Image (cartoon, rainbow, N blue to C red; front, side, top):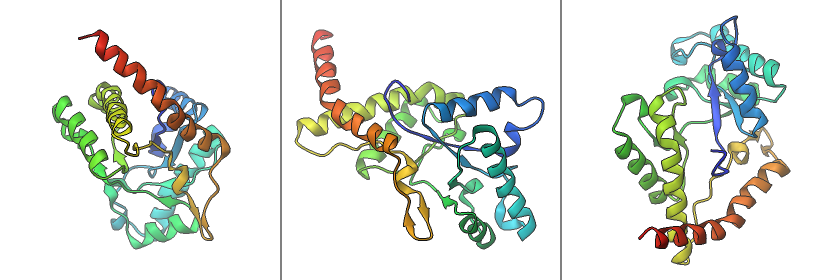
Length: 218
Protein backbone atom coordinates (compact mmCIF):
# COMPACT_ATOMS: atom_id res chain seq x y z
CA UNK A 1 0.00 0.00 0.00
CA UNK A 2 2.76 2.44 0.88
CA UNK A 3 4.75 1.59 -2.24
CA UNK A 4 1.78 2.45 -4.49
CA UNK A 5 0.59 5.30 -2.23
CA UNK A 6 -2.86 3.73 -2.04
CA UNK A 7 -5.09 4.34 1.00
CA UNK A 8 -6.88 1.63 2.94
CA UNK A 9 -9.11 1.31 5.98
CA UNK A 10 -8.44 -1.36 8.60
CA UNK A 11 -11.46 -2.44 10.64
CA UNK A 12 -10.28 -3.67 14.02
CA UNK A 13 -11.86 -6.17 16.41
CA UNK A 14 -11.49 -4.60 19.86
CA UNK A 15 -10.39 -7.58 21.94
CA UNK A 16 -7.45 -8.17 19.60
CA UNK A 17 -5.77 -4.92 20.66
CA UNK A 18 -6.25 -5.32 24.40
CA UNK A 19 -4.68 -7.57 27.01
CA UNK A 20 -1.16 -8.73 27.78
CA UNK A 21 -0.65 -10.63 24.53
CA UNK A 22 -1.73 -7.83 22.20
CA UNK A 23 1.50 -5.82 22.07
CA UNK A 24 2.21 -6.72 18.43
CA UNK A 25 -1.35 -5.92 17.39
CA UNK A 26 -1.28 -2.58 19.18
CA UNK A 27 2.01 -1.66 17.55
CA UNK A 28 0.60 -2.57 14.14
CA UNK A 29 -2.50 -0.41 14.62
CA UNK A 30 -0.31 2.49 15.74
CA UNK A 31 1.69 2.11 12.51
CA UNK A 32 -1.50 2.15 10.45
CA UNK A 33 -2.46 5.53 11.87
CA UNK A 34 1.11 6.83 11.59
CA UNK A 35 1.06 6.10 7.86
CA UNK A 36 -2.27 7.83 7.32
CA UNK A 37 -4.57 4.83 7.12
CA UNK A 38 -8.01 4.92 8.68
CA UNK A 39 -8.81 2.51 11.50
CA UNK A 40 -12.46 1.60 11.86
CA UNK A 41 -14.62 -0.21 14.42
CA UNK A 42 -15.42 -3.89 13.74
CA UNK A 43 -17.01 -4.61 17.17
CA UNK A 44 -15.38 -6.09 20.24
CA UNK A 45 -15.80 -9.81 19.60
CA UNK A 46 -17.14 -10.13 16.01
CA UNK A 47 -20.67 -11.36 16.86
CA UNK A 48 -23.82 -11.51 14.76
CA UNK A 49 -25.26 -8.17 15.87
CA UNK A 50 -28.82 -8.97 14.86
CA UNK A 51 -28.96 -11.58 17.62
CA UNK A 52 -27.96 -9.15 20.38
CA UNK A 53 -29.94 -6.84 22.63
CA UNK A 54 -29.40 -3.12 23.03
CA UNK A 55 -26.90 -3.29 25.89
CA UNK A 56 -24.68 -5.88 24.22
CA UNK A 57 -24.74 -4.01 20.91
CA UNK A 58 -23.71 -0.81 22.68
CA UNK A 59 -20.90 -2.61 24.53
CA UNK A 60 -19.59 -4.22 21.34
CA UNK A 61 -19.41 -0.89 19.52
CA UNK A 62 -18.46 1.49 22.32
CA UNK A 63 -15.78 -0.75 23.79
CA UNK A 64 -13.98 -0.96 20.46
CA UNK A 65 -14.18 2.76 19.81
CA UNK A 66 -12.69 3.40 23.24
CA UNK A 67 -9.89 0.87 22.67
CA UNK A 68 -8.91 2.33 19.29
CA UNK A 69 -9.05 5.92 20.51
CA UNK A 70 -7.13 5.06 23.66
CA UNK A 71 -4.38 3.43 21.62
CA UNK A 72 -4.06 5.90 18.74
CA UNK A 73 -5.64 9.13 19.94
CA UNK A 74 -7.43 9.23 16.59
CA UNK A 75 -11.16 9.78 16.25
CA UNK A 76 -13.09 6.71 15.11
CA UNK A 77 -15.64 7.51 12.43
CA UNK A 78 -16.26 4.23 10.60
CA UNK A 79 -18.06 1.04 11.57
CA UNK A 80 -18.34 -2.25 9.73
CA UNK A 81 -20.76 -4.82 11.14
CA UNK A 82 -19.40 -8.38 11.20
CA UNK A 83 -20.60 -10.46 8.25
CA UNK A 84 -22.26 -7.31 6.87
CA UNK A 85 -25.16 -8.11 9.20
CA UNK A 86 -26.45 -4.74 10.37
CA UNK A 87 -29.59 -4.88 12.51
CA UNK A 88 -31.86 -2.04 13.57
CA UNK A 89 -30.19 -1.82 16.98
CA UNK A 90 -26.64 -1.70 15.65
CA UNK A 91 -27.51 0.73 12.87
CA UNK A 92 -29.23 3.05 15.32
CA UNK A 93 -26.39 2.89 17.83
CA UNK A 94 -23.75 3.51 15.16
CA UNK A 95 -25.67 6.56 13.99
CA UNK A 96 -26.06 7.73 17.59
CA UNK A 97 -22.28 7.52 18.01
CA UNK A 98 -21.74 9.38 14.71
CA UNK A 99 -20.19 6.34 13.08
CA UNK A 100 -20.55 5.97 9.32
CA UNK A 101 -21.47 2.36 8.56
CA UNK A 102 -19.47 0.73 5.76
CA UNK A 103 -20.17 -2.42 3.77
CA UNK A 104 -18.54 -3.45 0.49
CA UNK A 105 -19.29 -3.77 -3.20
CA UNK A 106 -16.50 -6.19 -4.16
CA UNK A 107 -15.84 -9.27 -2.01
CA UNK A 108 -12.40 -10.80 -2.46
CA UNK A 109 -13.61 -14.02 -0.78
CA UNK A 110 -10.06 -14.38 0.53
CA UNK A 111 -11.42 -16.33 3.50
CA UNK A 112 -12.44 -19.08 1.05
CA UNK A 113 -8.76 -19.49 0.08
CA UNK A 114 -9.19 -19.13 -3.68
CA UNK A 115 -6.24 -19.41 -6.02
CA UNK A 116 -4.16 -16.25 -5.81
CA UNK A 117 -4.18 -15.52 -9.54
CA UNK A 118 -7.93 -16.04 -9.75
CA UNK A 119 -8.63 -13.73 -6.81
CA UNK A 120 -6.30 -11.05 -8.15
CA UNK A 121 -7.91 -11.14 -11.60
CA UNK A 122 -11.46 -11.10 -10.24
CA UNK A 123 -10.86 -8.10 -7.98
CA UNK A 124 -9.22 -5.96 -10.64
CA UNK A 125 -11.83 -6.84 -13.26
CA UNK A 126 -14.62 -5.92 -10.82
CA UNK A 127 -12.99 -2.58 -9.98
CA UNK A 128 -12.80 -1.53 -13.62
CA UNK A 129 -16.22 -2.96 -14.49
CA UNK A 130 -17.83 -0.82 -11.79
CA UNK A 131 -15.49 2.18 -12.13
CA UNK A 132 -14.43 1.66 -8.54
CA UNK A 133 -15.93 0.20 -5.41
CA UNK A 134 -15.17 -0.84 -1.85
CA UNK A 135 -13.07 -4.01 -1.83
CA UNK A 136 -13.38 -6.32 1.18
CA UNK A 137 -10.18 -8.13 2.16
CA UNK A 138 -8.87 -9.58 5.41
CA UNK A 139 -5.36 -8.59 6.45
CA UNK A 140 -5.18 -11.67 8.68
CA UNK A 141 -5.15 -13.95 5.62
CA UNK A 142 -1.70 -14.81 4.21
CA UNK A 143 -3.21 -14.94 0.71
CA UNK A 144 -4.18 -11.28 0.96
CA UNK A 145 -0.69 -10.25 2.03
CA UNK A 146 0.77 -12.24 -0.87
CA UNK A 147 -1.49 -10.79 -3.56
CA UNK A 148 -2.08 -7.15 -2.60
CA UNK A 149 1.02 -5.87 -4.42
CA UNK A 150 -0.05 -7.66 -7.60
CA UNK A 151 -3.57 -6.28 -7.34
CA UNK A 152 -2.27 -2.73 -6.95
CA UNK A 153 0.14 -3.24 -9.86
CA UNK A 154 -2.71 -4.48 -12.07
CA UNK A 155 -4.80 -1.50 -10.99
CA UNK A 156 -2.03 0.86 -12.03
CA UNK A 157 -1.56 -0.97 -15.34
CA UNK A 158 -5.29 -0.71 -16.04
CA UNK A 159 -5.25 2.97 -15.22
CA UNK A 160 -2.33 3.48 -17.60
CA UNK A 161 -4.35 1.78 -20.33
CA UNK A 162 -7.25 4.10 -19.56
CA UNK A 163 -5.04 7.17 -19.77
CA UNK A 164 -3.61 6.00 -23.09
CA UNK A 165 -7.15 5.62 -24.42
CA UNK A 166 -8.15 9.07 -23.16
CA UNK A 167 -10.40 7.64 -20.46
CA UNK A 168 -10.64 8.56 -16.78
CA UNK A 169 -8.59 6.38 -14.40
CA UNK A 170 -10.06 4.74 -11.32
CA UNK A 171 -8.45 6.68 -8.49
CA UNK A 172 -8.04 4.92 -5.12
CA UNK A 173 -9.46 7.17 -2.40
CA UNK A 174 -9.67 6.97 1.36
CA UNK A 175 -12.99 6.35 3.08
CA UNK A 176 -12.47 9.83 4.53
CA UNK A 177 -14.48 10.90 1.49
CA UNK A 178 -17.50 8.98 2.78
CA UNK A 179 -17.52 10.02 6.44
CA UNK A 180 -20.80 11.65 7.38
CA UNK A 181 -22.41 13.49 10.28
CA UNK A 182 -26.09 14.19 10.79
CA UNK A 183 -25.66 17.36 8.75
CA UNK A 184 -23.98 15.66 5.80
CA UNK A 185 -20.46 14.76 4.59
CA UNK A 186 -17.52 15.66 6.81
CA UNK A 187 -14.76 17.85 5.35
CA UNK A 188 -11.94 15.84 3.81
CA UNK A 189 -8.64 16.52 5.65
CA UNK A 190 -6.11 18.45 3.58
CA UNK A 191 -3.50 15.70 3.81
CA UNK A 192 -6.01 13.13 2.51
CA UNK A 193 -6.98 15.30 -0.45
CA UNK A 194 -3.27 15.86 -1.14
CA UNK A 195 -2.65 12.11 -1.19
CA UNK A 196 -5.44 11.61 -3.71
CA UNK A 197 -4.09 14.39 -5.91
CA UNK A 198 -0.58 12.99 -5.63
CA UNK A 199 -1.79 9.70 -7.10
CA UNK A 200 -3.50 11.50 -9.98
CA UNK A 201 -0.56 13.80 -10.69
CA UNK A 202 2.02 11.04 -10.50
CA UNK A 203 0.17 8.51 -12.64
CA UNK A 204 1.36 9.76 -16.08
CA UNK A 205 5.02 9.53 -15.05
CA UNK A 206 4.51 6.06 -13.58
CA UNK A 207 2.79 4.97 -16.78
CA UNK A 208 5.70 6.27 -18.85
CA UNK A 209 8.12 4.33 -16.66
CA UNK A 210 5.99 1.19 -16.96
CA UNK A 211 5.90 1.49 -20.74
CA UNK A 212 9.65 1.99 -20.92
CA UNK A 213 10.27 -0.99 -18.66
CA UNK A 214 7.98 -3.21 -20.72
CA UNK A 215 9.78 -2.24 -23.94
CA UNK A 216 13.17 -2.95 -22.41
CA UNK A 217 12.03 -6.37 -21.20
CA UNK A 218 10.80 -7.53 -24.59
